Image (cartoon, rainbow, N blue to C red; front, side, top):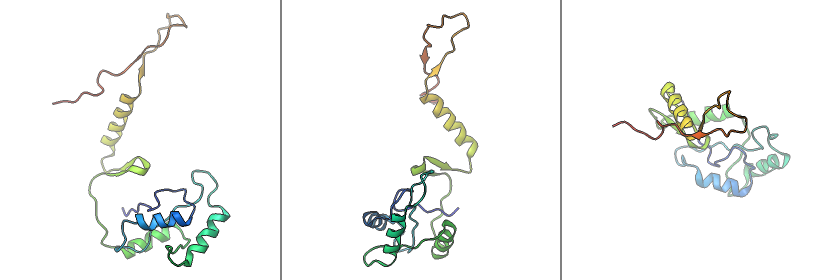
Length: 152
């Protein structure tokens, strides 16, 4: 799997001058690759890029002192990036994707079990009131006795 972490650290970019300057400073593959992807627009159902964002990108296409902006697809970007950087580092094992709080793993069953156990330890467990208890009786909250213990 060939991956790329967008240097702008956001998927809701706006292509402003300060954002592009940060993109360039934060580009980790400088010297090995000449292209990075900047995800811009109002993401997650927010409507995509605005006219102002598109205009800012067109202005930065050939602006001296600014990273050159080209519009394209993610597929085009990854094809170009892989062709330009065929000796990219290889990672074996799990790859923790911190910005998305996700993990790509070949060991998905243990990862799912760990996530389920972690979730059960952070959520208080509630005991169900018996059918005979009065409706005004508060539901007690307890934590699982197994959470936080390790085997030696």
